[in-house]
Image 1 (spheres, rainbow, N blue to C red):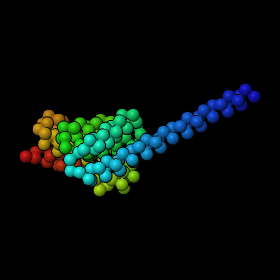
Image 2: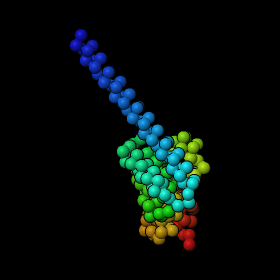
Image 3: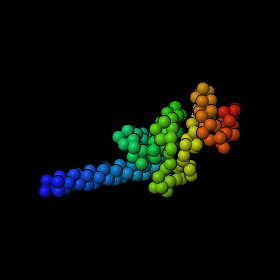
Image 4: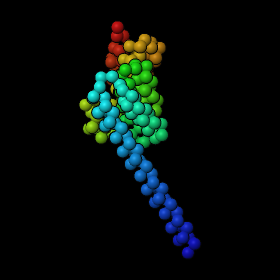
Length: 170
């Protein structure tokens, strides 16, 4: 009888924890989607970032900090980088964060569908490395560019020509 009672308690706790986790994950997803759609709408209405725009970026940043392992965290981080167009140094840091924290990045289908007109058709580690290489080149970060080029050529030998081209661009 004691075993059945203990087993019932354990199973109830397990069910409850799974339910709470699912509920929390659903809330993270909802927050990401809501923030993303408002950010896209806000960015389409103005050429220069407003306080609301910056607040939305900060909310996405908070979402990533609070939920770094969520399936939406990499999407949020990529949006942060994408919408950091007015500050190349900030965009550079945001892209570096993607390589560090989300090297196997791929966007969720919802992000591709709803935000695809603002993003590359494919977002993966190669794309992030290419974007970062171009930024390093533009900002004169020669050492970082050379290191990233070497790493990228080793990791993606089939794209070596592209990374070499960026390195040698004038």
